Amino acid sequence: MTPPDPRVLRAIDANLNRANEALRVIEDCLRFVVEDAHLTSICKSLRHRLGVWSQQLDRHDCIRMRNAADDVGRVSQVETEYHRSHIWDVLCANTQRAEQALRALEEFAKTLTPQLAQDIERLRYDVYQFEIPLSALQKNQQSLEQANIYVLTDARDEVSRFRAKMEALVAGQVDLIQLRAKSLTDKQLFSYAETLVEVTRSTRTLSIINDRVDLALAVGASGVHLGQDDLPIKAARQIAGPELLIGVSTHCLGQARQAVLDGADYIGVGPTFPSTTKQFENFAGLSFLQEVGNEITLPAFAIGGINLQNIAQVRETGISRIAISAAVPQVPDQIAGVITQLRTELGSSEPI
Image (cartoon, rainbow, N blue to C red; front, side, top):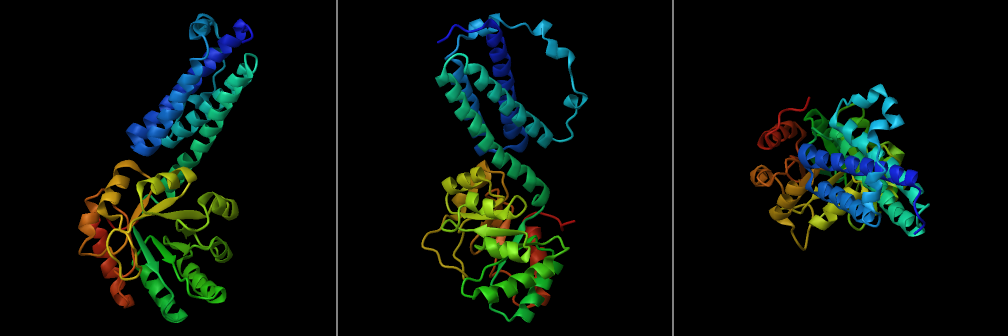
């Protein structure tokens, strides 16, 4: 290793402190405020990797070059540094601080050894990637925070009757409606999707299209829902852009964790119970809901055979959002009453 310039050691010391402090703030936000065990664990791993990297340096030499009392940067303060309006401002500011500090460490490490610089570069890119689920979590605190009733519908009715049902669902103030109709031609599916978007436009109900990113974009839907065998979330995001909501079905904790890291806006978790609308070989069951409820704060909707008779079992797992299909009455006049009952069972009030 090239003998270090003492001034470089001072810069490395400052940026190590800055990066460590920022990652610790992020970790504590996720642990104590957001209470997301999955993201907390990942942030802790990033912080520990930085510690391992710093062990390749002589930290005592770095500390001996420290001169915080006479640091010229102390007199240059930005007033906004002392204002944070929300916990998400804290997360955002410290994510940026960590990224900037890691970049500075990479540049200064280049004056020591290429390997040191390459190692910290990998960590920097992993922090960039970690910002994706943090951003998704913040976005969904705003758009999906109050959402807990998600209705899946097919296109078995003619368009006029389909429209009447969608209008009844909107009147019943469901939060999301997903159109799932795999047997239709593209032209037929477009017609139903267009109807769904027309009915939900300018309302609080979000319109979701199953599988088809292209169709969701074509009709101006709120989002698209993907299965494990559909287009990967990252590829869908490249096509859809930043605004389209992307949900994904998950059937085990590993899939749920990965969906969070890939930037999903919400997840479906199940199947919970046998369903009359879709057949499954295996059931993740209530234990899977419990695992997700204990670890993940991204909006998670329990799915699979959920109705008024078993919804209490779902609520006991810590999951307070449900996706339903057969539980929705076929008669439009009965829909609002059932939705109100389900919302009451979930322990939530009428949406504002």
